[in-house]
Image (cartoon, rainbow, N blue to C red; front, top):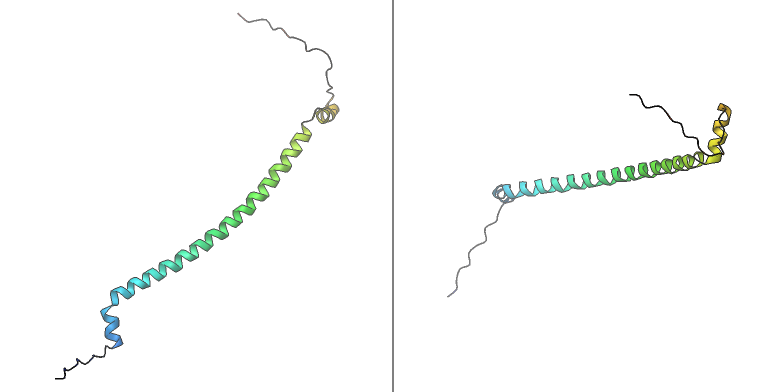
Length: 103
């Protein structure tokens, strides 16, 4: 006795798509999120690189200003800068000034 095989029905592509429309749209949304996330990550990397270069520039400026400030704060430099104003370095003991207390 031969058993009859059931004939495989040909599934048409349009009906397959319509039956799984929810899943296909879910995959589409996931693909859009994946692409958007990749663009956002690249944007953040570019922004971080720009900020790092700005930090390097500002650090260089800070170090040069600090070096200049240290040089200008030397006692010999201060004396040279105030000499035109008629000020000079006092070599003796400091004098105490007494002011009467107002009652």
